[in-house]
Image 1 (cartoon, helix red, strand yellow):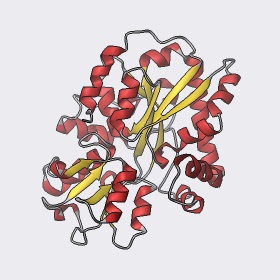
Image 2 (cartoon, helix red, strand yellow; image 1 turned 180 degrees about the horizontal axis):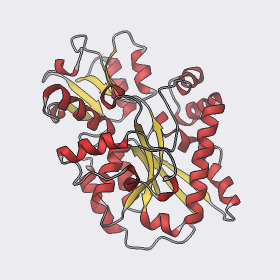
Image 3 (spheres, rainbow, N blue to C red; image 1 turned 135 degrees about the vertical axis):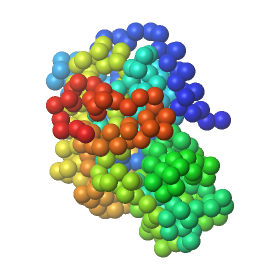
Image 4 (tube, rainbow, N blue to C red; image 1 turned 30 degrees about the horizontal axis):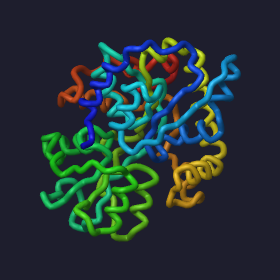
Length: 329
């Protein structure tokens, strides 16, 4: 039985040992997909090790691939990972729940990208067309980024944010894409992310119902990299090396998207070709930046419906100081 973010938060109890100053290995728990591309690159190109040497320390990076945000959160809270990378809204919930304990904050945003709600049911033209016979796959019920976006859209469409929650099913993106494309399961819709959403839309039986950008009014942060206050404060050189590695990965994605696409396809055993992934990386709607975008649109909604106890006064409340000088929102 999959644990929810709330049961995962019990893992805070396990964080009783102080973090060792300047650790020799740094562990990244990440989900699958292009939203986490920098983590693929820093592992394959040993970017963290490179920038650690510049800081005068010896450091090895290890990546733990996971399929759901709850798994990333569990790894971080149990001490099985030093950094977590997942959708931004699961992180916001985690930030809210750990303010008086582990105090988890983001070191950087990773990516702004549209997430598509796709369907193989020709009768579904908008979210108002879903019936009790439909099931919407997303990474984690009520927790995933897509779950929050669906709630935001439902609030606008029905005046009831949780109207469609009972239709959602937790399923990893690769499995959900397979189910939707097969047309032989209860899954009639998938709220997904690149590259899976484009793989689905290549099938003429699948169409887009909604984009997350329709809900947020344009580009908004999709994913982030976060850690605990304890780890951040005890490992300042590691923090600098990791942030520099993410920045170098962003530069590679911008200037050499084919190289980045080749690494992603190889490491993820992706069904998409290098050409297809490269084309996505050149899409202006998909942006790799450490600066947060439109974070408060999520936090205002989540506070209003009770997903978090209190909205932050600024996006800076959610982040460590290393990015305060950036034009975030």
